[in-house]
Amino acid sequence: MARSNLRAATTNTANVVDPRVAPVLLELERWRARAVPDPAPPLDAEDIARLVRDCFASLGIDPAAAESFTVNTVHYYRRKDILDEPDGRTSAARYGVRHVWQAAGARLAGFLGLVTLAEARDEMRGSDESTLIRFVAARVADARGRQAVRSAPSEARPLRAASTASPALIVDAPSPIPATVISLGGNAMCLLPAAHAALRSPAAARSLVDALAAALGLES
Image 1: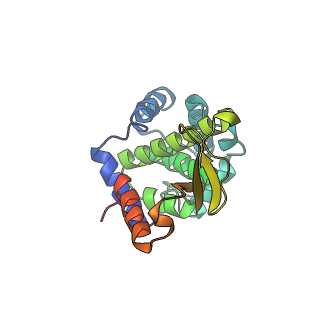
Image 2 (image 1 turned 90 degrees about the horizontal axis):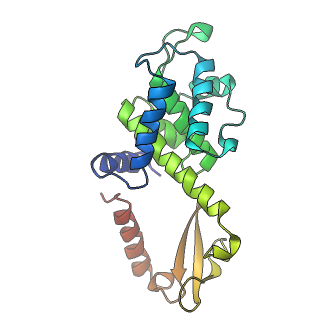
Image 3 (image 1 turned 30 degrees about the horizontal axis):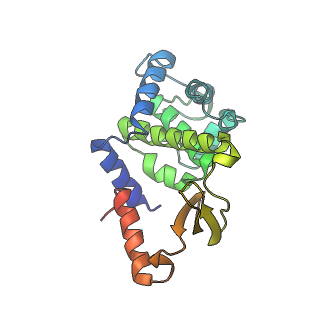
């Protein structure tokens, strides 16, 4: 997703609360009150790594997201300019709570693969804390959605195939409906009934893309 689209999505969600994200924002605030009660704590890289792991654990995020997240990960994010400049250098560097949100957002972005690290950097670098928290909350909601799909019984899942332009059935309809699954990359996909005009008409396909952008609040 382009940087302008990410910024637009963030602006929209600032005024319209996404029902997936709203409860996560409250959870993140409760976690911060418990784990980081000082509004301006002098944190080092080890603290950042520990707090990210603790945050994920408290939210019930897949443990794989926190596995191997260490001080080396923090230094890597710093070298890639994902984290804002800390105060001081090397072992004397001191971080703040905003760096915790940036590290958590970057880790979830990389773990999910729905937002690249470069896109996460563009969204979070230099952003105010409320924007950072919303970014993390959205990624937590994404992670929970993925966990719910993976934990659902296979017979309850509506899709039978997920490769590019592959045939499938909408099996939770009263009668199975032939459909096509179109892979969009980054674990996203579009499911279209086989009779949908967008599969045959460029104009209908463009209308579908416009409708999806409008549904996501990304209209220019």
